[in-house]
Image 1 (cartoon, rainbow, N blue to C red):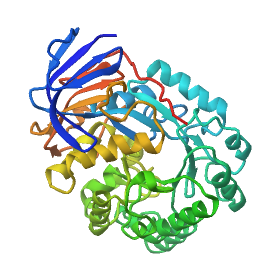
Image 2 (image 1 turned 45 degrees about the horizontal axis):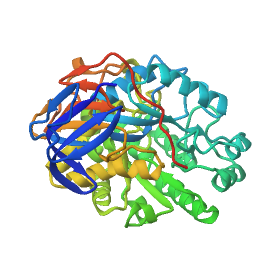
Image 3 (image 1 turned 60 degrees about the vertical axis):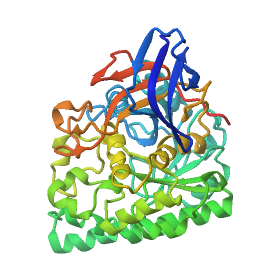
Image 4 (image 1 turned 180 degrees about the horizontal axis):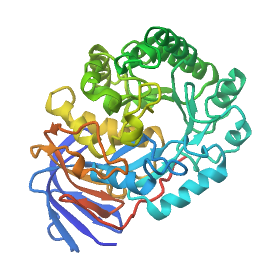
Length: 444
């Protein structure tokens, strides 16, 4: 492997910001110190005082392979992730066929080994009929077990209370949940169909997939986890009301943790007028008060991790009428720079953001030797220019679907370079064509 010396970097790591050099050899960080100019390196990168942080570990993406590759695949979406400063991802099981067996899990790892530009891990999907598979799961083989307590693809909705209790009791790994109550959603949908027929306005999406639908399902998951002793991670909170179910304090002392996603932190209900179905997602983007509540909870420690829930669809699919338009947004390419807006606006500090995007997901999922700037750890690094704006337009998009909900937006910061496992995957707007992502190891 090529050796690198990164000089004059403002490193942000474990709550401390300081100017340092970083020396990388054999894919790992060998030294971090004030002056490492004597170290022999194949390539020297002068950071020029710009910010060097651990790469974002995205705990929730949908890369659509296998079966849905007209929307995206592991190669295309991981390439976009690397361009956006995401060095590792954990991919969801609602593909076609769904990842509900160890054989399908192994097939995803085989594909990623050949094509992924970022480091990768995969969830095993929970279902009503794969309890024995979950019980026998090797804890090192999957980042977690994903349970859809709301709508999902195929047989992946776990709506049998006995099966749900079995998963929560016996899963050998963290259980990650999508929490929405389908009965409430179906009732709301019928109510608005009586008024609007099939032409329901997109602005009613947060009324259909309502606060109560989210809260009731999340409360059930939290209650069940407490009863069963489950290590629970509730994904993509979207309401301020749900925050009452979680506690402040250090993440490492919690049995139950929570995630927020970039779009719920940036968009609000008023954006449906401009963006329409392009920001249709489940759970729905809700009110400005909800958005502000999520941001405050992120700063206070009640929310532990930030992810994307990256979920691409084609524009043709998204431009269908509301009831036929699929939910999900492509997000990984601009996730980090969108989050840095909250630093620019004074809502979060840069060390707080690094904790939520790198340190915390590494610890919560027991990711081995990643998520920190530490000697001996893999060199998963992102060089950020906090003062160089990113102007977003569809012509510079790496997603297979070819669009972004951030089109026309200018963010204050930009990603200059991304290093994945000691491989310089992206620098100055250019991607290395060789996918060098590695399988994540879990220290369990």
